[in-house]
Length: 225
Image (cartoon, rainbow, N blue to C red; front, side, top):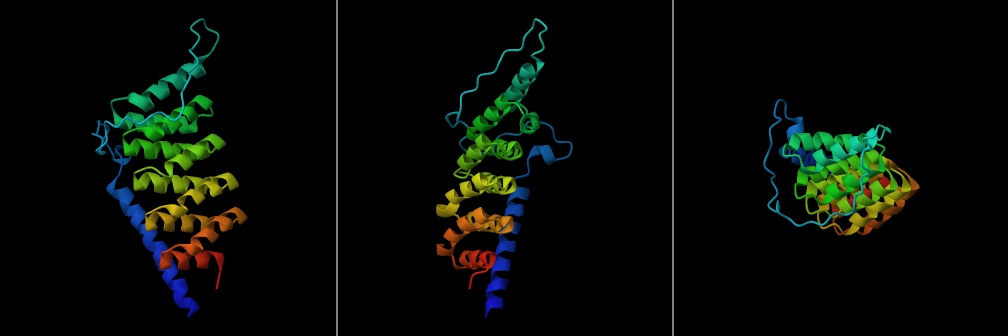
């Protein structure tokens, strides 16, 4: 009856992927809504949360004497837009710009956005950290794996899997004790697609999961009997 296990595992994985996509559609950001550039009220109930910044940022001041420190000035301006602009659309654009920057200050700014009270801003920061893909970014994504919002956690999983380095893959081991089986299944699916020694070493832990369908999916990826 090995074929039964294969079909069940495949159906479980597909259902998880569909559920994640539906969650994203239900939480579509204004940045992807055509013509909707106005501010949108944050949807989190903890909008006044007193989250502490992860790192302290020290931004070099642009040199007004013409010695050409325009890069520092540009990063400062983008950071200000990302952190405190009244229009969320502008914040999303600035966060994307930070992800495209090679400036270390931009990475630090993204790390601090992981504690923003707006869950959509945190998700956008996670996506940009996935583009940055440095060791510091990976540590930030590891932090996002325990975010209180499911979609932020799922996005962090996707970004770590896309980076795909051993450090990024081992960071996914933090999800072994994740309480939501849908999130754990997403991890199994991402690890199974990576097909590396590091990914398989993390997958082995999920063979002990208390969810039968998740164990079946794990076994299928590991080609276990």
